[in-house]
Image (cartoon, helix red, strand yellow):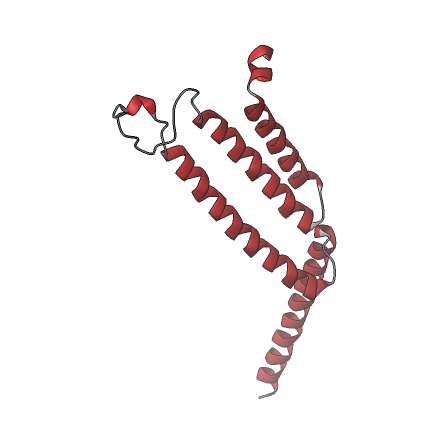
Length: 144
């Protein structure tokens, strides 16, 4: 078991990166650090998947004259799946950072706990305001 673990350097590095990213997601309270942790976990996953896509002794899937057997080439599908995942990760990162910028402009903090407490105060204020409005509307009905 440990021999295989140490011989597959890329797979081991991918698992370590994935664990670092996921632990950063769970332990960090800063939203930007959470997005960085998500990117680290994504990178570890892509490294892990690509480490198993490589087959020693095979060539890239570009047809070379004289070699017609499919056994001489690697499968290109895992590479395309990983590239698609990278593109999706970039889009998720961009959207996440845009949301973080909007949250920072509104609450002037990146700490998730402070943002959640500010949202809870806003909700409590909105409920109190709607209760006052409902009471004044009921009083107007009684007078009329």
